[in-house]
Amino acid sequence: MYHYRDMIWYPTILQARKMQESGWKPRWFAKDKGSDTYRYLGGYWESREKSSWDGCPDIFGQLPNDLMITD
Image (cartoon, rainbow, N blue to C red; front, top):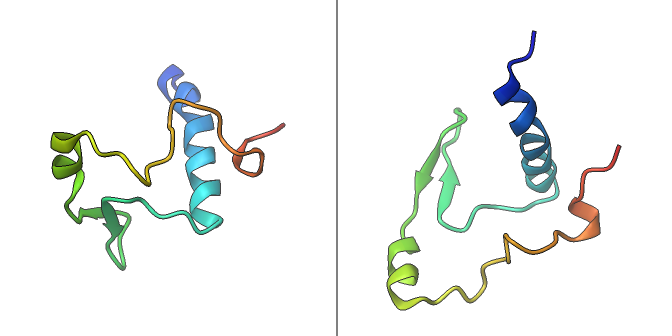
């Protein structure tokens, strides 16, 4: 049985998996080998302090069509 919370996050999880499979990598994190955890690489707080988001995708805008989940 699925929990309501799982149903809300499921599309987001699918989208993240598809992005990773297409070669996308997080900007400030690196996946630890042999586990499903990520390690912080640094740079976020410095960018935030300067309000410098160059090179960051617009996460509040539309995703490219090739990353959209379609049924």
